Length: 351
Image 1 (tube, rainbow, N blue to C red):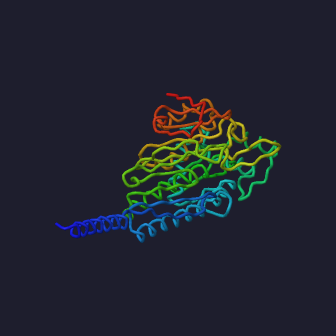
Image 2 (cartoon, rainbow, N blue to C red; image 1 turned 60 degrees about the horizontal axis):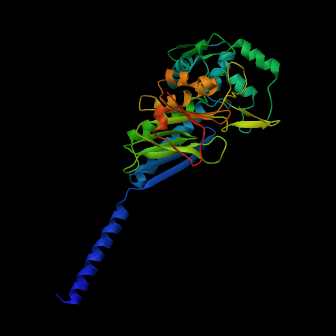
Image 3 (cartoon, rainbow, N blue to C red; image 1 turned 45 degrees about the horizontal axis):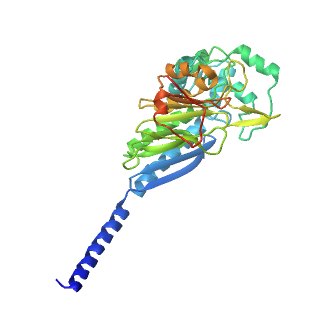
């Protein structure tokens, strides 16, 4: 064989290799993303491995559902929830949607599990601290008004739910589903995506995240926000059907006279909880995983050093807390997954 023939065959082989590489690149599954601002926070949707039209249509439907939920259950703008609150204040029985009745029944159960530290009935306290507004005005509530609400002790167990009829034994109940709705929206998004045949997606609602499937050959990987620095505290893989939720004093807060006041209110004191900077819980696959990841992060955040008791009550073994003094406490199960940022110190593993 001549040198010219050898060179020709080499060129042909290289051309085949190049075409094969280009074809693989052209057929490689792609990521499609959509963003929005709903529930007072940023929403990010990602779909992997589907045609563009399929991915975009499914994500658009999810965002429409988020907008519906936002409008239906808004805590201070006119909504089905505010209409229910008005009826409760008047001592009347309200007829609500089947969806809202189901949500309230579930929220009541989650509240009881957490000794009322997750308490959607205390919307009056959240309003007093100025968090029923799009822009926070630094202010402390009137002490007498705050004590009046504490004395009335509104709680979810005050609700009487019969079918889609709702009333309250306590007219001080003012419902705010801000600690529940984002998790519920995760579950709704997962249901919509599954119905559309989407197998691999990541749903992120302001740090409340649910994973469907995986990203190619690898699981989805997410970061846990550092509560005091503009960077992740740690990263971890999130597997199919898992959801993670974080409650933090850095998400919605104001500062007054050098002190931070967050929207996470301790129903025992009527003031913002101060024992923790952040609390993350990872819920392994189960029905309502998204909802649980949202609601179940509140009681351990508020409980402070007794946080592990509350994560156990909710059947959660993967959890991480950053205490008020900056020390990091993490369960053994979650520590095995985490990759902390370089230089991270004061990590305490708990059982």
